[in-house]
Figure 1 (cartoon, rainbow, N blue to C red):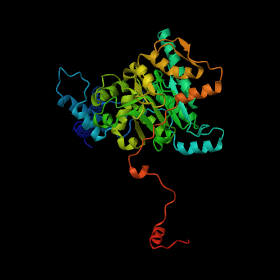
Figure 2: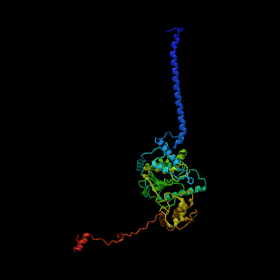
Figure 3: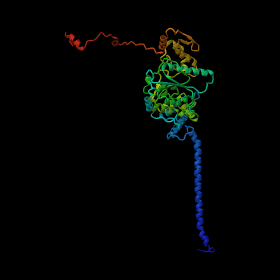
Figure 4: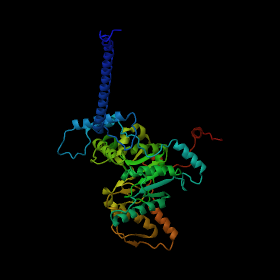
Length: 471
């Protein structure tokens, strides 16, 4: 060791000081890297919060994650909307109601709308098997009525509070009475709901959780028949042709050309439809409801529906457009069990029907359900005439009718006290569809009268030979 005077102490300290400086530089570099990574992470979060809001077309409050295919679906939707904006030139004469060519491309690709985790309730599996077992264990609740027909439950609803005016409340009461009259005549059960079962699904969407809840609570019911509160049954004699729908689970009034060729937002109607009580229907309701939650999800879905469905105005997503969107984007999954009914008015708009009631009464008869005597009339106004038109068919059972279709006053049309049972049969026969006349055939072979038992070929040969058959 050198002495301090010789500088040995100093020479011994120099290597230690160099190692300390190098360690500090290394630590400082590590801290700088950490700080840079932290800044990058914060920047990523900021960009995700700003850019990501515009990128997400699907949002459900309180969701904790999205399915793996959601990002691809969102990218497809965004690309479609960009194509619509780029390829469609604004036309001052266009009212903005036409779906452009990219809408067809959108549906041809089969892209479906998707949300995060919203559902109508806990998932129900093997419902068909569970329902069969329940019916077996509860023979007091058969799935068929006294006439052997599948049990039907007519479902309607109204807001929990009063209407804005007493007149509106009175019309709602008439609409309820109308449905009850039809159910009483045809042995159909009836439910009028006023409770709101899901705060997220309001307006027309409220029917979906209601139908699901009734489906699970009434396994004895084979068909649920939804009808809007402002729709009326106007043919009291028509019976639903349920045998026609064997093998199908959803029956809606619709037109296949308007649905698949024009992609019109009025191609089908959800104001009155039939839904079978089965596992398929539960899955359909869950898939149908994804556009329904109020707020941003419904608003953004409405933009997509307006851009892709012909004739649709710009407003939030509605249940009818959402069902059309579902049937177009997932045709292979759903359409095999969907029946588009157009042979009778399972749903008829009042605009073309209300003014023809007098002509209908003069020329035709209840029981047809089509243009000759419309089955269901759905309106926004003009309900008084439709109610009186239907009510006359019920009052006939008691010997009365309205003074006119515009009057609530009634008058006696016949004395029903002498032969009440005969009068009842006559009134009920009026509600039945007349039998179609037998069309005479011009085929001579069908109209030729048979002259007793004809001889066999062997008998005719023996006669010509002069022999008589002994056997």
